[in-house]
Length: 174
Image (cartoon, one colour):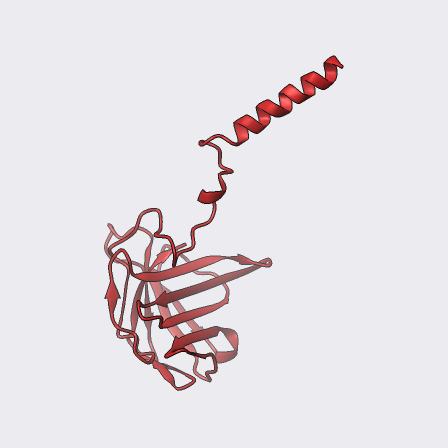
């Protein structure tokens, strides 16, 4: 009986320790949806301009919805970025691979090597024969920590919508 009480006390102490505020297992802090919650340190350097895409206005500032992601999905390295404006236009582009976060990355992917999704006017466009020709590099301002500049080197026609050549996105890295 004494052994059972000892085990229960040890388990109780473990539960108390693992559930306190300094624990790394606090569920609300484990996931941040970049489009519904601001990042831990919102950056005024986020922006997108000259996108085209059926009506994307230029946007910038802490509330600007522009993110870039690099991680692994089902064991495959992936890179992607997304923007969303206040009127509901969305652009998402992703592909298998990785980027060097310390230097300029020149990315060239054939149309079957990446996925693009543009939501414009309530219609999602996903079909393109255009290659993805972009560069991704850390923002040039040292104060823009975690911000990467994505520059389109050629236009992309997707459905009936064109993403402009020279479109620029300054996205926060998640």
